Amino acid sequence: MSLNRRTLLGTAAAAIAVPRLAAAQETPGVTATEIRIGSTMPFSGPASAYGVIGRSHEAFFKMINDQGGIAGRKINFIAYDDGYSPPKTVEQVRRLVEQDRVAFLFNTLGTPTNSAIVRYVNQRRVPHLFLSTGADKWGNFQETPWTIGWQPSYRTEAQIYMKHLLAERPNAKIGLLYQNDDFGKDYLIGIRDILGPRADQQLRAVTYEVTDATVDSQVVSLQSWGAESLMTAAVPKFAAQTIRRVFDMGWRPVHYLSNVSISVGTVMEPAGPEKGTGIITSAYLKDPTDTAWDNDAGMNEWRAFMRANVPNGDMKDASYVFAYGVAQTLMHVLRNCNGNFARDNVMRQAAGIQNLEVAALIPGIKVNTSPTNFHPIKQMQLQRWTGTTWQRFGGVIEGANV
Image (cartoon, rainbow, N blue to C red; front, side, top):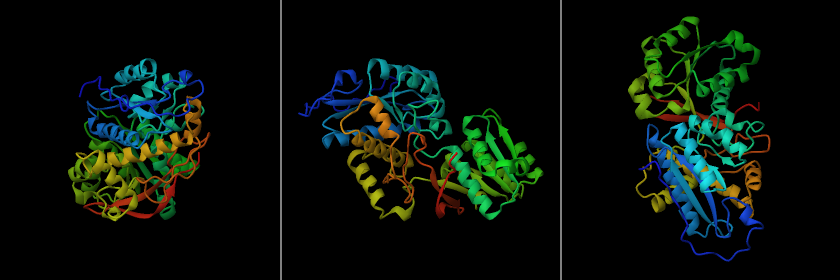
């Protein structure tokens, strides 16, 4: 797929007779017959597996257009490939904003790529909605009031792990292994949110660099310190190394693992599936491979969407579930705009979601935003590795309000 990939939906649609927006010509991306939405996705490059999210969005908006669109307008979804390269993201987003004049950006993917454009889109006052990244900074409504996340932040995830641990072992010594960047540092912040002043005594944190060969020495140092619990905030390669090393050392801490590294194929099996037995992680989306959702109404709705609109999609790929859930959230916002798709109103509605239930989310987890809450999902459910699969347990846990 070329780097200049562009998808236009609804451009050939016949005009529908509806009242014209007042001063529509002054509302970027909005005409009497269409609303233009922009995105960047890694359709190529090292993160190209996530390109299915963009393809799912294309199919979703086509479905909406076939159903009549939104407020009489067809959605013209323009998705450019950035190859997961921040400089390319900057180039493509400038193209979307300045040439295509999209109304807003939706679900742009990646922490480094979004970091490269966040200042630009906020300076231009372009809504930057429901990013596909869990960095906590996307909830910083004071400094970036036109940018809002969607999925639970890594900071929230760490808070939830700490709530669970302290309920069972309030005095446990905690070891944290984390990647030395925004991703890893969010876990350190989340732990400190819950531990407070006790962190100075109960917590020992060590870092690794993505260029390191192994994390063996870091794991040994945490065991030597006497950590009774271990939180691993690592990408798949180092997560698998940690699981294997912990087991081979005969160390048996209460082990929490970042939910970005819980893939059976790239983490649990390479580590040795039996070596990770008992590890705890978290979930907020329904797992399409979990038989508990075989007769679930929300998942049946998603399966029907996939069969009708993405017939060649992998029904086991959770990225499609993610895409469906975030697209549903956007449609809720657009419907609440009541035909006024001016940028300030779109942003106002995105920051005014109350107890929204989404088919893709685990029951009890709802989407909530406000002018002072740009973290739409702050709840998760814990799950434990059985040696062969992840098994959910307990109720839904909410992160701290900080």
